[in-house]
Image (cartoon, rainbow over all chains, first blue to last red):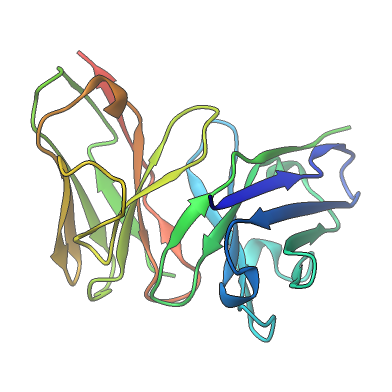
Length: 119
Length: 107
């Protein structure tokens, strides 16, 4: 069974940092692009970043470029999102999803982890 | 960025109704259009990919159509478990962008 499980969310002060993790199982992790998508309270979905299966390509939404870094460890079947210089507007549920290749789709999602940026 | 506009933003319908949601892209995206279902506290679910392909395990009452800039998601006979929020997404060009969502509520 394909599973992706996010962790690492929590309360952080503005300007602070947080690292999200996503543990994948039930599929050959190293063969898939992976993606982070977020949903702010009361808002819609926003694509955040994705990474190619071998980590050689990464893409970001403009609002996080230079502050967030997506990475992966194929030996550990894990995806990460390093978030720095956090702002109140980064408050959201962050979802990890399998897929996200150009012209593709995200076919399996986790239940998300909540990040709250507040003083 | 490619803007995705869904309509309506919300709708009320009864079990058994036929429901149609539309999604318009600000430029042509060929058929690189996906549809997702969201329920509170649950993992988002892929319903339709490449505009009209049904994801494995998704009931056949869900269907998608369109190409270029105009797309539709149709639920042929609404079931109780279908009350949720639906999003379209383009994967034609980065950043991948979503519509604002359509909330389907019980009438």
